[in-house]
Image (cartoon, rainbow, N blue to C red; front, side, top):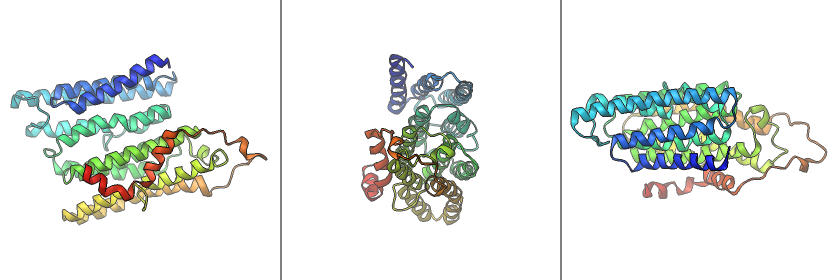
Length: 344
């Protein structure tokens, strides 16, 4: 892609998200979401492959449907209440707006577009779609969290955790696995949204850090399939080792970064006297743990590839400082979790 066009698209993404973050008005928030949607589509189709065109079409139709639902619901709400304020919602429109934002995020059962779209686009665009594109809808969801229906959030959260685990078990494509991982993590966030929005924000920030670290690592070794990742050890043993640890962090194993949000969410659910919900959530998360451990097993313990006489010839991967920084954060934030929670 032309560097000037790429810069314009990335700047538009930043402007769209910033506009949504700064707005108190549903119409401005909707405009920011639309700028975001339109700015990423050229990035999806920068390699003119049929899969990329199909992914961009699916993404556009899904996001356009959700945006239309947001605009119609916000208009009807303004007609009823006389205000466009984001925090002033009347009862029927809270559910429709929440559902539209969850559709934009890719929460189950409105998730069907997400794995297919991420599978059809390059890793760099998949990184933007899995992290940056979720900031604006999640911010709006956080702002209306006190108005949303608790049963809706619990249903969507549990469904997303289950679908995120089940969907990732049979996959051999790493981009689809990351898509189902995203669905599962968003389920954890939505589950606790009504009880403790600050904890949802904390979980969201750590999710962005861990997902970005995983995508940067995959981009460094140019792997999109499990079979490719299993033969990456001779290329960069240190990077593959850190990737294994990032996967375990995404799974939520102590003492890595991903353990802190899961621990705090389970503690919060216990404090709210929802022991059954906490138990079901922990059992459902075992499905996701299975495919994370399977990926780790493939990376380290499978039969080694045919290593050439000089293994240094394979080690041509250049690890960027950004990859190193995101990987370090994805692994070592756990001791600093209380500090971050106090800041939030």
